Length: 519
Image (cartoon, one colour):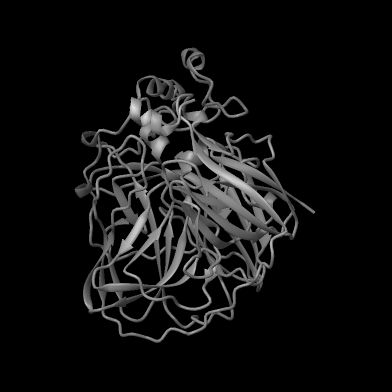
């Protein structure tokens, strides 16, 4: 093994060859997509076993032997129309007539959409919706989602951030095979109102299935919401890569190392839509990209944060000029412009220290906002956040990168790549715990813990500790290179939980661990 600094200093020759060998050719269907469960050629199997899961299946999308995508092979950004009115995310219908019960149906299936004139693109979608149908429920509701898998790969539905039992949470251990169905059922407790989402968590397939479209939004509301009378807008950010023929290409080696970013940054499935805000509005924002970091900025406008992953804060925060939202994070915000009329929503450059790529500081336009609203006073108090009390146990998690042994050995948690048969930590049901998570690598990594919301206690940089700007409930937190974070939480369900980097390529390559919660 060689560390990343030495790798970058002395070149990529031998290590790049090792990585390319790890990217052995997968079996493909008629569209060129990797097919989970089909045998690769004898030559590919002889070349490498590193892309196999524990069933001997090939990892989907791991057939890109090229080091990087040639821009000439991509559809130009100008090919997609811009300026259409922001589309609302369609709601998943509630089939239940019983109060306090939500029953819905999701189907994962390949669908062909035309985003650019004369171009047909195949996506893998829930109910045929780019961005997924939105699920809206209330605290205390019993939720039942009947899921059918019509893909050629196994998949799951993970209820990201929601307090649901492990066996209902779409863990990679509970795959839904092609042609099969599964009903997810859970009851949402009081106090869990927040901005959540759902997405695939299939073993070693989550990155590919996500960049082909398998994600949707999930909102839990409170009947005591102090902002219930505010209108809402929902901003779901995803990104998309299309080749010059309109196909979604497989990941290349640089995607696997750094996380995939497409040339199109979409908002509710649209490129640079026009947003109309005619009254003071509560805005929920999701970053559902595989790896893209969003540093939102609106010239001549401040952003007021009122909520995070796990719901409202205790009080609105002081206005800020920009807001970093890392993959899987969510925020609730209110805009405070210094002028009305046309505003520009932008993504500012953020250097997340990619491997073997020079940082190019480019500002990306995301949308135009026509703001004609007048100010409205925010509640001074939004809610009281729970206190976890004093921690009685601590877990230590270390993210690291090691080069030279192939992609499947590059990204590690506590020096190991993910093993479905290994328990990496044990927690006691209902106990308050601290998790000290450290990033011993040169790249940003967002940490996500399943099944609970946590409170950030402190960040540690070069032995200097700092407190977060405000108390909040979160399930995802970013770690800069060589930074540590201490979070405090409690698990309220017994069973197996996952924790991992939420750059989905890194998760698929093994930057994940398991904690067993015991009664």
